Image 1: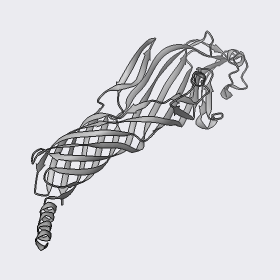
Image 2 (image 1 turned 90 degrees about the vertical axis):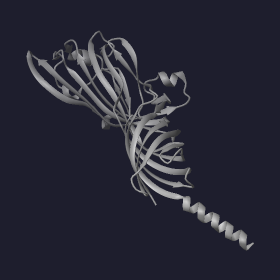
Image 3 (image 1 turned 180 degrees about the vertical axis):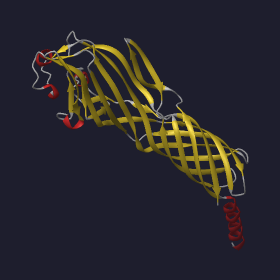
Image 4 (image 1 turned 30 degrees about the vertical axis):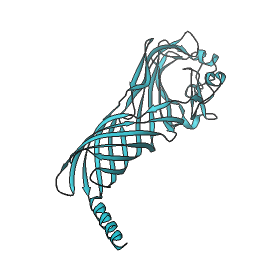
Length: 326
């Protein structure tokens, strides 16, 4: 029995002598791979699809790991992604104003970007003293996906103020003016907003192949090629700001004058929505993404429901880092 405990103690000592705790920090850049549909483009009637992922951008990681022996180990990492802006929507078109023969030129774009905190649990395998592989599970634990929208609606004809009155469109900045007043051609409505998308907790996979160079016995430099496969299912979105401004030349009794006035802000939304009659659009403070909805619900612009979709954060990137062993 005494020999058994002596042998057990010897094995534990040998095992723990091979074990190694380490910490590391990395920084790198990732490209959106595989590219998936991220938006659409409409240029004067020609429709096209835009591809990309929100995983493209600069990333950094902090890792804590433990090697059981010279070959196998595990690590837990926390990281942050500062995603590149992605053009998810672009439009240049001619549209009728409020269903009338009057037309306007619409020119605008929506850019999306990811700002995400993530965590991963990985298994590490050393092929040699220098080359290693890492694979495991990945999740997103915080952050946001933002959409930044900016558009201009420019009128192509003079618009009599009386025509707006007949349509029931009331612009406070024009109140008190005679119906004979005219909004001159070239009047511009500028619309900007920021929409923040929130998603359900996702799970994905991570894999990497790296090369380690030992500077000293405890300090090493490494470089690795890393692939992340993860998508976030959308839960809801909220408008964080909204501004709509009219800039125009008014002709009143033969005299022109320039005006610039706010048409709408987020505080002015009625019951959480804003129906832009002139441009034929509806905006909601909050949009809920659901897995099931009736056709009637989806076709009703006043309803704030949309079918859910996934935003890809998948990427292929290069990391460089420093590893300190204890």
